[in-house]
Length: 275
Image (cartoon, rainbow, N blue to C red; front, side):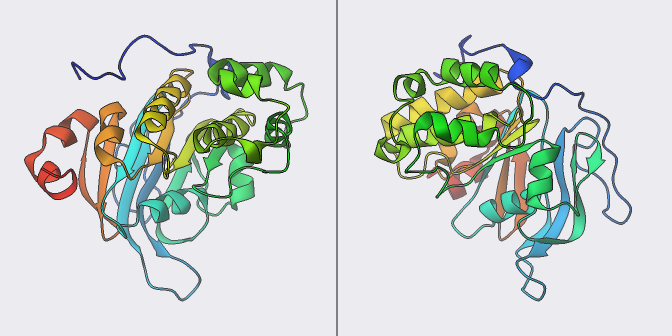
């Protein structure tokens, strides 16, 4: 990715902010077909078919997404393609009727979202992702609700990743800018010491300058060792920082490759990146 402004040596290399267990070995579960990227994928939603509710139509159709340790994986595609639905399926917010979800070598398909957080998933939804009446620091403390150990070191690491949060730690989170609120939301997720971080459209509604800053921060988080799976509407910019990308169309995998490969694919450029 020569000339990519996002690629340099910035970033916190301190991996102790993560839950530092090994990636494990993932194998296809019975009845799910062949696993995609399953030889070393840390998190994989494997050939997922499903939708909302018990009787609703399928929105995902044999959709597979995966991310490995230290990677940024992005899900892009047109409106209504099932991008956020795929993310929610991985997090357990809709029924996966066929396929499986596996994290760190374990099948978690039947776990509730709460249990997935306990298992090591950090999830940042697109909206309603902070407690607006609480201070920044109180929001971060809420992120440590599942922990029984001393989390002050993790909070210090969050402040190192997001210096503006230290400056505004006593301010109500609802008074912050959109980009700063997103940093609070990501910081709160990091307080759980997640094995993987999932972001649903983190740059929605922010200016291009703030978007660039958020992508810089996301890169820094990934360099602590946390795999990041991200749904993003700004497809070109997201693929610039992606180790791997998934283009979804109508709930199916249309194109899969590295960020660079997808940016250079003429069909992807024509159909999804504006030429």
